[in-house]
Length: 376
Image (cartoon, rainbow, N blue to C red; front, side, top):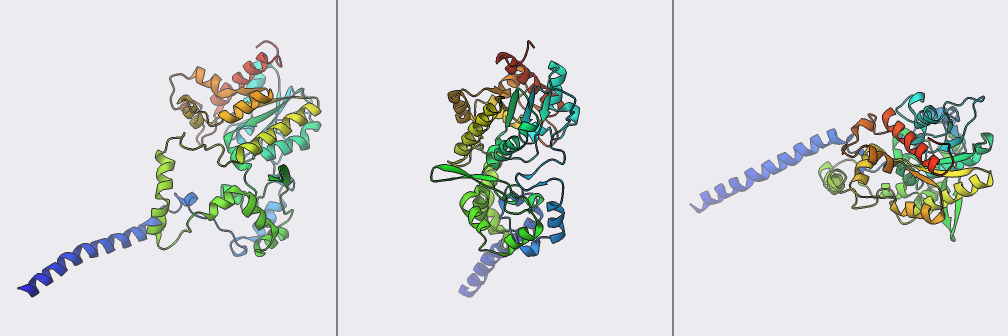
């Protein structure tokens, strides 16, 4: 009897244990199907063995490579006509350039149709605030205008903490370094992109003692954050358990729980420095500097809920007496009953033509109130 009870007990224990093992094995086999979806939660790695030298050569010999800025548009400006007078020149990232819309649907084009005044578009997709300011310093004197505009979109603040863009964007930016301003002894210093050709880039990858890796470890926030992530691979179950809190926070977390715009204590510091630098250089060139606050439809929903993640920067602009146009306030006034702002959104989250029209109207109204534009 006792022996039979032991056999039964062992069967009762073995069955659930076997089910558990089979379940874990099944999960382990299925989780790789999710790798592409959740790749951003795992560590990126780059080695000489993983890099195609020919692709590196194509990048460094392309028209988009710029040894000072990291990269630039194939044409320095968008929709430029040498015979046309311009009231302003504008710098920034894809929200200035007008990604996902044609030339006639950018906010600069809408502004010209509304006011009769043209704005030169020198925005570049993927730019950090540092790149935008440095591009202004490089080209502003070539295009003299009364007003210098700096578009301020929150991804630009985050990218200002990046040196090797691979750790911010992933594989599409394998070869792209960008300039970065770092603080040493209380002063900001500029570190330029380290390489102007593929041979240099391959040397950096092959030499773990190269000073580029020291700079990344000290100054690139996204390189440091990448080091904290788990590496994809067996055991997948444990790796996914580690990232589950981040996945849940990204999906269900309240946008005010942490400041997405300024991710560490130095982020606002460098942004304020770069804005001050832009303002000083604009005035030195005889132009009036104006900052244009730009937001994606997703950002507008957060602001409508009463959360301003850039509130400290707005206070900084006010304290410095720097002119700025807050496009969010104008757009929110027009869309009081649209909680998701879908009517303004392009497929990938940029502003569509209607959204850019709202920016143009806000800008025209703002410049008129500053006496920088005739009656509108």
